[in-house]
Length: 415
Image (tube, rainbow, N blue to C red; front, side):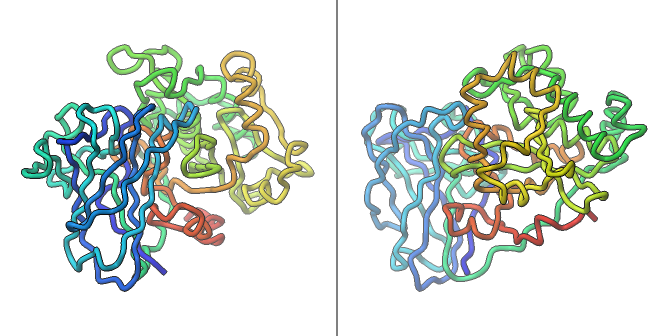
């Protein structure tokens, strides 16, 4: 029993954070209830490679032990943003407003940065340029142009998190979805079983563009299928920049294509650990013939079968580590393997260690409500509150998230 307190949705931008120095301090205000126990402070932060400066934190005037920077991770996904966790003594906390102040010893912006979610009218996050004497909640970020909330959260023992939200699908009358329907391969729309149509769509998406991660480009493609297909194929995004179009975008495009074809699909997000880059973004499709959500990887055009029956995520996990013989590759896999995906990446993928922790992106209405889609998912450590993790993950390093679902929640049929 515990509850997370936060004021943002984790929609941070990979390339737009807050840099901290000796003079440049960041502050987060959070309203907390009374607590008799130590609480946990979580913050998403970046330590510059080679930095030896500790991060200093002041909680309601109480000094916490300095936080040492973590070593850089050699990963194409994280860019060295981590979730840090610090214990908060109950005596340091107050009922009502609590202030958390962050700074470093560095003279320049070369030691620590905080993740920042822009787009807030009156944020409870503040920036000081004079070592905390005066504060502002505007003109924030390292370029002094943003207004938003720092990714700083606190979990207390008293209370309970909200129940996880029910999965939301796209409005079938959305004009963009209707238009997309005309672009789909005909075999995925007009005939065939659910499984046959899904395999056609997975191959179509997997073969549509060249995979590019955040180490290859910095212009993240939005979660809009038409834009993903266009930017991915042309290799040209906003202002003509090379776009990031990776597993996230294959998953989003596939889910949207399925819904355009009249199939129920949702995004499935995985990671081996919250602070490493071995994660993956896939999909699930509801197959009424089998009465279950079936796993689909539209990046590699992969599904798993046993006795010709497609497998769900729980069924795949039960087979591990002997799952390899159950994998079935579609034609899109060869396109990815031969042209764009390194063999080393495929080897990491093949052991399925990225499936250790599972979550559901509960919104699949990417077209009707684009404002809820993140601007950098997969380019930094998972941080979005729109991810619903499994109940067991609350005690496995994922307590910085607010929603956790039971087995029944994940297996619930679409409404």
